[in-house]
Length: 407
Image (cartoon, rainbow, N blue to C red; front, side):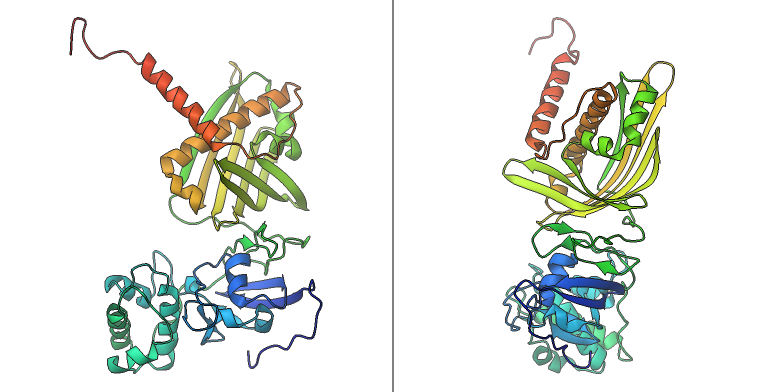
């Protein structure tokens, strides 16, 4: 970007179309002319590694690379970066393949609360990229544009100096650039799911909001679910429900189908309630296989709190002569508050929701009218049900004491 883009006068509700590349992913976005780049990166693209501190360009927390130079994203309007290339801290390295700067910060314990760390990493990268021969005595002044309240800076200087000494010929480039999943919120506070192989479109109202594919993270999922339920309805009756997407969604607790995008793509929402906490995951679903006895689906969504969910679900219906059985297998990847419940608790809740889904499928297949409810299912109710079941199992468990034994 040779100079900031000039945006002509526009009315309060007008939007400006902007296209740029962030961490190797093409992005096409519609934003208010007054929305800062920091807010767009965090809220609409889900790149929350870019932290916001003072919002006056003083603290350096929001530092990113704009066309190769360190820039304060809180001082730049998103509409000004049209045609630019951006790198955020997410593009610097991967969890299993850290950039030398990230590895050095960890090894030297150059962070405590971590709030300033993204700003230091991006500022340090810019410094070593432009001045690979910098000496340790100059680091304190050169890095003074980022403020830290925890470490006293000594370990940060140690970490940067270590990388500088090992890379006098030039620091290695960012290691996590390429087309990636971007999930964030749209400007009105609801969740959107821009992405990916095609240019990411971060405008929830766009009819063409649809990636080429949904890519699940590598590694172990947060939750693995394998459940099987016996149904009263016949294979043909259950197949009628599975063949109808809208009937299928009605059976899933808290799920809502919002829009059909074509070619097996849908926009939807799943809601949960945990006491006063309300979680609403808005995103995309792609039906990879949709048969009367088999459904294979990928989904991704994000919550207004910053939580993210990606899931692969396979549902099969079989008849073995003894009745109809519904089998569900799911791999769920969670980030945010719901992941904080713990794997066991999150797994219990997910399994119970699948059991309720199976019961609803059975009821719908038998002819009952399932009225869709947009009220989020209560996790507390599910937990109480699980607790009752476990207490009942404990009461039914045979005693291990022999007759006549006393305490």
